[in-house]
Image (cartoon, rainbow, N blue to C red; front, side, top):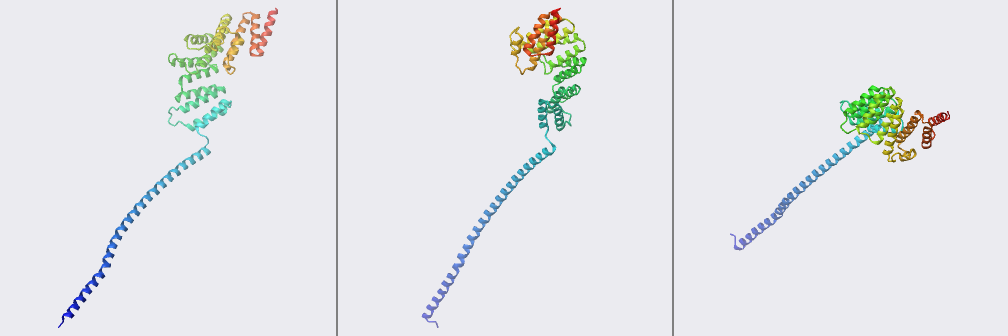
Length: 355
């Protein structure tokens, strides 16, 4: 039989075993909780890493895209430079070079550059082209200066076809016809262009066309048509003093061709007064004063003044006013310098006065 002492000893032993068993389980429980926290921590770290990788990939793609764009731009620029280098200058550069040659007097070189510019520009659609019309106008100017009037006339046709100023093109065709001494064609082009003008307007080329058509008529001994053209222009009221003086000079030549020297002398006087009024030299200014009023670079104005002065003196000679004519020629030489024709006239007039 188990005594009381032995029972007490057994109970104590059982309690000791339980306590030992409980002590052994605690580390296991702590380990599990620790493992649970570790699992949570590890999940957050992977998510952050994935976001960072995706952001880096996007940034990489953007950089690659920018590099591709830059590469394309560089390629296009480089190819353009290579094309320009091997294919030669473009149409705009050729136009510029043509104008420079035109202004420097290299007329054939200018025409060649303008032709190349037109070839570069092309016109496959046959539509009007402002660039082509502009280049063609310059080409026609060069052809005019080369005295290739037939080529210039054709070029002015092309200007109109390309949408350029049709009225001015017709005026310039009248000039070409006049230079070719085709008076009928010159008058026809001039009148056609004039009929297209708006009321009170005169397009570029009008003055040159009028003079060219009239001059062609005079050369063809058709003074009546020439006088009709000039008188119409004077009566239109659309001429300034400078153009008016030029018309009077041409009209006076028509009258001289008809041997109407008295009327011609009066017409030259009107032209002279219109010219000096235009340059504000004062009414009936002396020849030296009139010449001083015209700028030296205005060669057209000075040339017209010389023509009017010379023609006035010739009219006096034909009217047998020899002494006065001689004085006019001497003044002419004094103002404009020595002139072989004027010297010849003076010598002739001296012999007339000796008779």
